[in-house]
Image 1: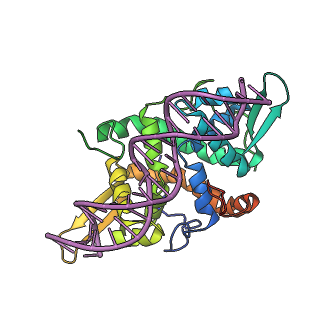
Image 2: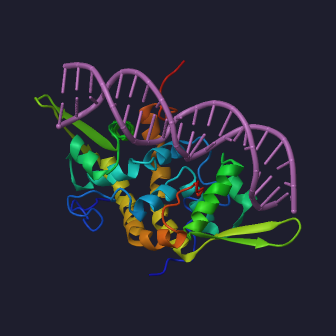
Length: 135
Length: 135
DNA sequence: CAGAATCCCATACGATACTG
DNA sequence: CAGTATCGTATGGGATTCTG
């Protein structure tokens, strides 16, 4: 499939910058594109998940990062925290409406990456992230 | 508009993790969602841009980060570097086909954020990024 | 089980200066 | 103009320990 060659200027305001340096968009973009933001958000797409579920789905995340990411995203209103006062504790996280909207536009990205990642990385010589120094 | 309640499992493999911990997808996702990745990529949507153009459009980026981001994205094959051996030097950066594909799925995200960012941040009390401490 | 609190390190990132 | 080289810092992020 071919993408229209015609740019969509609705976001790229004319010939100007994308997001002004300190506008809210930058903040939100940072939150979402934080190392674990996308993973967590997408992980919630299937419905409410418990803490431990999320930990397993976002493979490799530490507890600290999970907590922090969840709080940030909750603060942005992307997800909801639902704690039940039982023992042992049970807490469910689920996307808000706003969160679902966001994930809806996130999914194509994730899907595209999932589809093309292998050819991309193997072209670069897998493993090199930003540092390419070899001791 | 309402998003289908039915999840799209094509990416979220069943009840499993999103991206396996060390798969190429993670790498690419990290590159793209690096602090400046999205900005640079989207900035190139309008067509080839020169170094200085990019610097202005990705407001706030340092030269170091610009160089680094460009190299990473070039390494991934998302953009192409075209240096003309003239004086003063002139270098143009442009999206590859692969890059255009990526940006195509990136734009809806950026657009969505641009549209909703203000209400989101102002709900959180603007300014708080990750640290919320006030001296 | 679901976290909070600490400690600590790596590195992502920025500011500045230098160069072809 | 389009970078590279260095340096210094902040903070993102992991490992571990403690708790209700």
